[in-house]
Amino acid sequence: MNGQRYCLALDLVDDAALIAEYQQLHQRIWPSVAEHLRNQQVLDMQIWRLGTRLFMVMDTAAGFSFAALERAAQANPEVQRWESLMWRFQAPTPWTDPGGKWQPMEQIFSLIEQP
Image 1: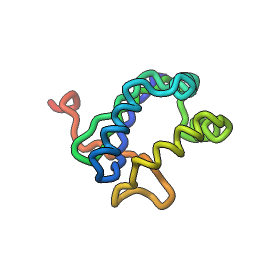
Image 2: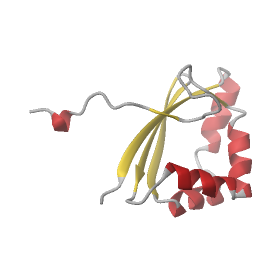
Image 3: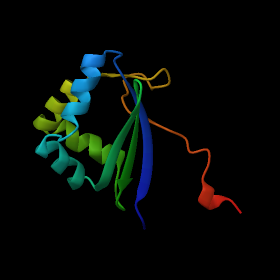
Image 4: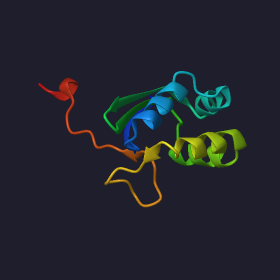
């Protein structure tokens, strides 16, 4: 079974200084956070920004599970510190589930699937 690509959305607090700091922190995330993601079958992760809207593209290997990723994150104090720090900059979108963070997006078009 092949891996999968996930696309997720999240907003940033509308503050230029906080957005700049958020971007700076993502130039090189903490090594323990990168290791955590790789250990959970995340092959690549990219975050794109337009204004205060973030768009994440996450490519995963076969066997990836959001539930396993969350369990591993909860058990990792460094990842918890990173996530707490990130909430300083992040804000849920108007469509984010209560208590949620990154919200999965629905694919509505694929050129490869066109005749």
